Image (cartoon, rainbow, N blue to C red; front, top):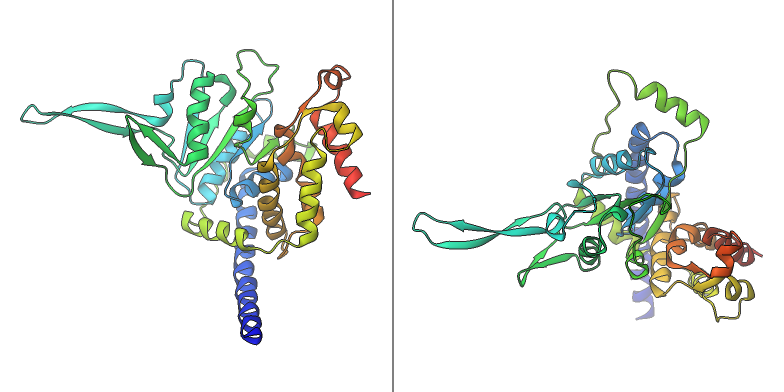
Length: 337
């Protein structure tokens, strides 16, 4: 029996390696195609792709004009996803996102209600400037992100598979914004900070986007293939040392766990969802970089995007000018030593 089990394991390992190599080839083509439309910003593209490959949603934070919208539309095209976009405004209603019931009348005068689907019924939804909408409208979207269906007048409507939300958010100092509640921020697998491009990337942007024609990315995989890669990522083995590193990292970011710096600076820390996010994204990062199993380095590299929107600083730490990123950097440095 032991020999049989071993034989099956070897076969599984071989088929796993073969599947991973095919996925690697697909990911390489995806990266190359995305780079035709998005210049520089490798870290942003990587983090956003990791969120999608892990089957989750991402929050892109940065000032306007940094190609966040272009990134989302490019990913929709390249990944073969049916995409839609909602521009969030203060007067946007939940029904503008989810859809609404309309009354139809047939030729005999009989009336009936018909559900007209809203833009949320897409495989890749761009929620532009999500923090400009009222909390009620934000929560309508965030609930569908969590449950993958919407309920209208007691009837349930399932969202398409796969379903990903890439939301953009302006820095909160800007006027007319409603910060997302902490429980809803937790629905995002990762927060991706979008900074200004470097000099060479900005030079390319100037030269290549102001002519008569721009390079248009092409679709390289289908939605069904994306789902296969997502399943493969969930099957990748995670070494015990990596699991322990995830647990240690998440717990060291919580006050009351015996870490003096965390106790001093963090008001509340990440919950179990942060660990789940690290388990998924560490596997996705390994595959993205051509490896078949995640390492502790993957976990530490993802600490910022996965933890930063799941923590809050104490008033004293904010008064000292500290940021959540500073605290995470400290925790990561400690973990490396």
